[in-house]
Length: 270
Image (cartoon, rainbow, N blue to C red; front, side):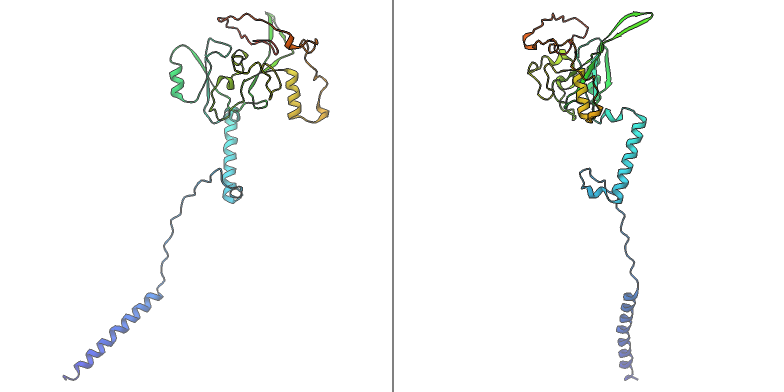
């Protein structure tokens, strides 16, 4: 009997390595579950991304969404395309003319602080205006009302354009009155006002109606057959009468308290 004990111990010792090997084999055959990767949120595509990025399915989808948003904004606000995105507002005194006291502001606190006293007019600034050679302009049209009943109005057929004194800056970084205002009574104080403006090819930063018509035909409708015969030099000008402007000088009396617009017609001195 004492000789049997070692045999059992030996048998028991041989079984343990076998079981360990079987368990190891089972672990190898057992399928390993793969860890699911967390879905990362789509990162926005920068506007500076290469053009190839926007040609991908996701890029085309984002472009379609952007176009739809812009269309919706245009339908709700007819001036959306010209209002811009700089949040610029024009702030001007309610009882002044000739561009006096007009400012361009972008911050609400600044507007409230400026308009605490007196009465002011605040309007959304047109940040993307129509430009001529990079300059802002307005059209001065004169009418004469001779009677209210019946209403009788005479319409002058020779309006003119007034330009700002400096090229327009779309970034709104430059708030100079010479950049944003077209009043001749303002820009005539600008350095170099009396010199000829090369970009506009004129003196005094003014155009006649006919010059504007020529510009529109040259830039918007270059087809020769669309050019109409009424594009003639304006009447009642120095050139029409054969007189050089350099030989003529007008002296106008300035009235500081005059509330009327003191801007003169093209070619006239300030």
